Amino acid sequence: MRTAVLIAAIIVAAGLAVGYVALGGSDPFDDIEPDKPATESGRAHHFDVEKIATGLNRPTWVGQAPGDDALWVLEQPGRVVRIDGGRRTTALDLGDQLRLGAEQGLLGIAFHPDFATDRRLYLHWSDRRGDTRVAEFEARRDGTIEPQPLRQLLFLDQPEENHNGGQLLFGPDGRLYLGLGDGGGAFDPRRTAQDQDNLLGKIVATDVEAARPEWQVVLSGLRNPWRFSFDVALGELWIGDVGQDDVEEIDRVLPEPDEPPKNLGWSAFEGTDRFGGHDLDDTGELVWPVATYTHDDGCSVTGGVVYAGSQLESALGRRYVYGDFCSGAVWTLLGTPDGRATDVRREQATVPGLTHIGTDADGELLFASGTGALYRAVPARS
Image 1 (tube, helix red, strand yellow):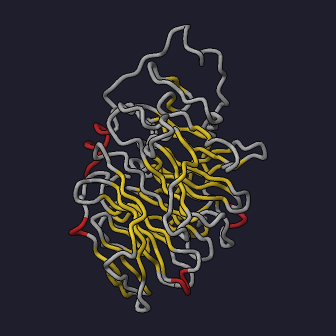
Image 2 (cartoon, rainbow, N blue to C red):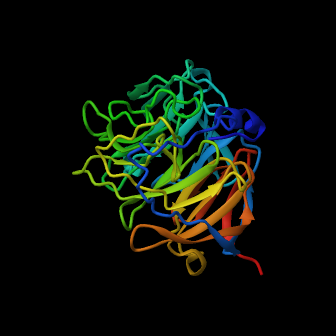
Image 3 (cartoon, one colour):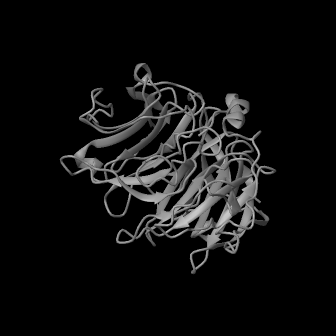
């Protein structure tokens, strides 16, 4: 996750000044031929965007809660904001309980699938020490949130101030999913992403109905998953994983609970490029990215969603929508039946400081910008 005023600091934190070396002939992966990821193949004008709100403080998430017509927004400095028509309410303010930095703050929210009657929701933030906290809260009927959490679901030490991940999301299996970065620093210096005993550099999940929820690794080998989503129709996860020196990647994975967690390759690989001196855990299937772009076109991917609305169905039906924080570029692509991707198109629409791509209750696209604005997708104007 990124904020527009701190791009320079973020690039340094991402390790862009650090090089990497290729391994010699003794590397066991020398003979592996990666699946070639899709890259931009042209331009498109599938939709436009229109601004629907301004004046927010570094929003990191926008969407709707089940059974609620209002928009909910996270602000990185700690506020949960509810926008009902022209009325804005601060539902909760955790500002005095978190550390705010380039990649720290209030980072994720998920509403219980039965929120309309259950009223539980879940938040992910960086506490005052910069460590990860995930807790369960209860919303009041007036749209505000009880300030004291019902319980804490996760505390995790964060060794650095970057690569905190952030996404919280309920999956089709009813579990709560969380994306965690590798703990920060350049080139995963602690090798956490390939360590199956460490939650850092993973997507993990837990059953919130359990008396004592336990987090299980779903996917390993991630650097900093900044936004992922489920394509509910196929049960697949689509992930935007922020790159190191050169490559931003999109991953498409079908989790298989009866198999070892699949491995997205970091830090043995950035995209399909091999990093010297970094081992690859071999307990799970290695999965190559389905799409990539280089830092000629941006510097920090923001993962999105497979479009499932109706307003733009003829233009965007079943296309995956994603973008870049630094350039504001937005792309769409098509998934292929073999689990890969094709037809990557750079859209005419752009969103500066793109931090999140969400949907409303009808599946229509919403965009959050680190500049403080919210946008929605509308039919393309001729």
